[in-house]
Length: 174
Image (cartoon, rainbow, N blue to C red):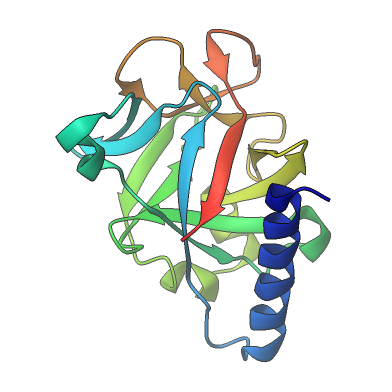
């Protein structure tokens, strides 16, 4: 087993232990560094989450992703709610078709008090394959978080992954 696989296994084990030991009324908030396979980091600009190549002094702009397990969904799907700015702004999928990704001013732990129906648009199923993660919308199955092939464009959602819509991410616990 390579080091990255061992780290992922350890992170998963730590997450499960933390969740099992935490009462349902409380939430363990995790923090991670997330970037896409093209080495684009996430950062905020004008209340929008963008993906771009951050170098030198700009690397300090990178946003850490805060996340919690959403126990309203089956644990096997690894349901999580994602946020930025210490979990005060959360990623949400709009109810329109096609769905649009947006940031909403809501505390990440407050969402855990909501029902499955209410929290679904904030929930993403995290899947892992060959060192990479994907995040599928719980409210819109088949729609995944994505970055664009263009520079400094907003994080979005897609049904059609490919070179112009990147859905594979590195997800490193902080």
